[in-house]
Image (tube, rainbow, N blue to C red; front, side):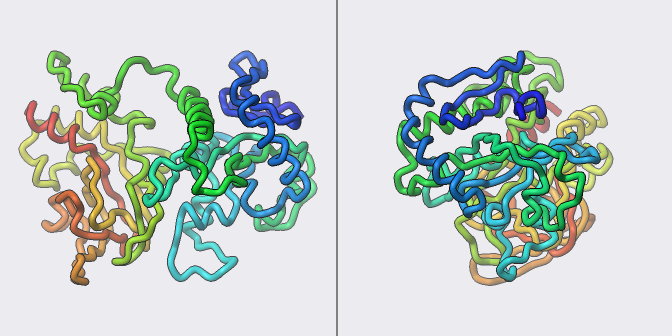
Amino acid sequence: MNIIETFPKLSGFYVLTSSGELGFYDPNKNFVVDTVLSKEFADHNREFLKSHLKDPDAEGCRVAIIYRAGEKKAWGSEIFLLETPIVRSLYPVSGTKVGELTAFQKKNREMSVYRGMEILLEYQYSVLPGTPLYCPVLFDRHTTLDQYASLLGREAVEADKTIPVVEVLNLAASIPIGRRKTPKLLALRKSLYEGVVKKEMRKYSGLSVIEKLRAGADWVEDKKAGEAFDDIDKRADRNLTLPTGGGGSAPSSEPLIIEQYLTGPIKNVDPEALRAFARFRGLSDEKLRLLASKSPVYRAPGGACLLERGKSDSWSFFLLEGALELFAADGARKLIEGGTEQASSPVSYLKPRMYTVNAVTPVKFLWIHDALIEKILSDS
């Protein structure tokens, strides 16, 4: 199987060849060897492949598989399916029995290839900031879907024998976590990340609003209404990860990934629904429409931990529907229901946040950057 012929959308993603080279397929389907990385990791890659090929199903090395589904998903036909231990790590749920995934975890174990690679590359422990946990590369072991029945959670069927599979391997798996923050591994992670981001972002040019904010630049004041926000809702600029997360009132060391709750088909909030929030009641119809155009609706299941006490970020959480439970440091709890006066203000608005916030029921909410809110209010 030729990866790029079978999965043409995987151009730009890094591939580990059977000879240990690292490279990627360009838009013309030509394989380009990254000579620098291939040389830097030559010895490591040989040992890594030797170990993987000896026991392909050993826990830790393979983090996901990619295959083409019979029916199209919201993002397309290519499925990025996470291994069970990785699902547990990315989406921790307290009280789950060993060997059993919750309905929420099962739902979130498959996604688009872009989203899967992005999550793995950005995932890190708060106690080890900047340390790569996953360096995902594609590897073709010339396998078919019937060889992954245990991962699929069902018996293999005859059709599975004709469906090619590409494995996603964690090239950092054999390196102790304490030794992963090295220039060589950081350079690898950067190249892997650029391969993913450029694939999605190559049609955009220049700095976006959020990038300018991160760089400390001022707002561009001479733009027409709305132009200052043109890039605010681009996927790469969204806040994908909060520093840490955890259920109930007890924080954990795992990151909260807010973007997991923005699932397709993506729908923006109705402008009139924004009038339920005190901060937006004085906005003109034009401003409400502009803000709504930059505010997709997020959906999270009951039991999800959405915000964590003591953490800071630059976003505001607005509850549209459902019920949330807030946990304070002294153990006090309070309930907020969508559509009530209590929900007319951003949830746990003060930074650092004073509450850990869990969904009691399925909820719909908005996750809007503070800079966008400040800008649109100041221009009203």
